[in-house]
Image 1 (tube, rainbow, N blue to C red):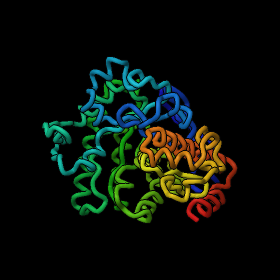
Image 2 (cartoon, helix red, strand yellow):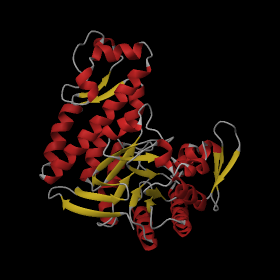
Image 3 (tube, rainbow, N blue to C red):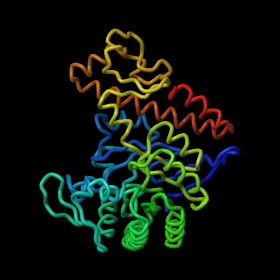
Image 4 (cartoon, rainbow, N blue to C red):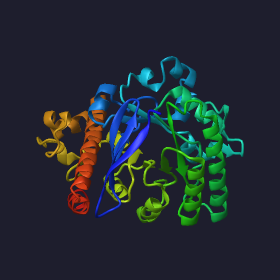
Length: 370
């Protein structure tokens, strides 16, 4: 099997660890942040730029590519990699998050989920088997089990039934996985804020057997304290020799604290989404470049960043691009934000190797969050 994971070093002061994901399309040191390429594109960037500002592992979205252009067309290109001309590693989600985010236009049944197309209103139906089949066609190195991502504040009774269904769906998905020698299928641990449900879900998924495990159902509206309370015990209930993937998390504080709790993989649309609205992540905190205070600012976006954007353009020019509704502004801030997170993840890995992650966290928080 072309996928494997090695733990190279464990932190002496936290639950953090350094690992390597081995895939058919590259080896990736962890902890790692993965930019999101929902529609087979990281929004506003071409693949060469994405490679520059990432560690080479990105995401595609199963649900959206299933709708447009359809998995058959993507498969005809040799999968997402050939479709978008991406040379690196690739992970696809399962469509399970859309079960949460499109809750107003879907119905959950034991067989699967009935959706209404968000544009046409057409009825659609996805089963766990369909999700895996589509992901087989999309051709990612890592694929995800189809699950339900229930609201964090769902009742205990609902959460329990949801977790039990997610486990059944995971078993069905694994049985339907036609490319097990080529694609690593991860299980997804659900359970909301309830430790007993998280423990039972993790235990049952391990009985089914997966090469990696995702932590689902977080960063969906709960407080930071509630999320961290769950992360605090996930290291105890997940296998030490498998990668842990915290889905949908990408703010600097969550990346650092997630790593401190033993998480190996992260993804989020946050850095690219806020970039398109003019917000940049910098070493001194967020900069809303559209603000008037930057109108005549001749300094770089982030004086501590050596990315192309910060070495080339002034804050004044970047503000002008947004005020003039120029697409280049969206592209440049997106490029910078991903470069910032790439640099942050490198710093986290270095701090783990040198057993100074706690001191790094304290210094970073003091500067970024003032």
